[in-house]
Picture (cartoon, rainbow over the protein chains, first blue to last red):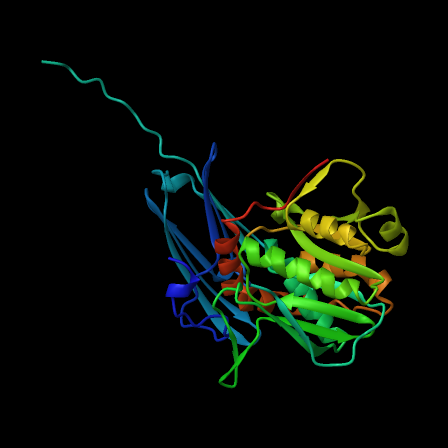
Length: 111
Length: 240
């Protein structure tokens, strides 16, 4: 559905209770790679939780005198290993690499 | 359907034109906003067309145009406040070049971001300069950025340079490594440093750097809408 059919108000700079950050999700040979724009966030203000099929990012920052709370739950396109997820924050850009879950195959006896 | 340009102030003769439209990293929008602020440029015109998306700006309850012309200090900045689909964008560009050609401009400049996969690792984004002609290159002497020696440039900047050339308007495209989908004030600052020598006045970027986080948050929605609109059009790229 294009612009014409959506009456939307946007572009007004008022900080919401919870902001959804801009983010990108890609699947690479390393696994699921997520980047997220979190202006003003320091690593001590950031909480990342991972399960086998989702990553939850929560953060708080002070931007232009206002407190901003970010929250985003990302369903991963492939199953991931939550114990091997690594994250790095550089100038408010979060970079998460979530390696794929190792799959083991079991031989099935045919009766 | 045409594009209508209305000037509301006396014209600037032999101006420099900067055309800013939303694109990768919103580089040109951030740079244009900062330039308008530091050079204290005034709104001197508006551009409208039935081809533009049904979006209006609103200020104090009153509808406003989303493509505006700012002027002063021998400079025009034409800024589209909302992303335009490809056809209206190309028609806007042609109309602006026709309009500025009549004023015999010193130089027409388009700025843009070139999405860089590893932008996060790039401390100082590299600016690349391409000119519409040898004459434009000579006229823009002193402009920063590394001259693109050889190769191909495609996308919006290429269209702008070609159409400027067809009209005899000396033009430059300054492309900077940027984030694709996140507002990139750092890249915008590098472009401003590059164009400063041809503007004839100082462009203090300290405030841009200080307000970087606020700008990123403020432009979040415009960035998301730009990404959505750009999905229908090819991204700028260069081979070289």
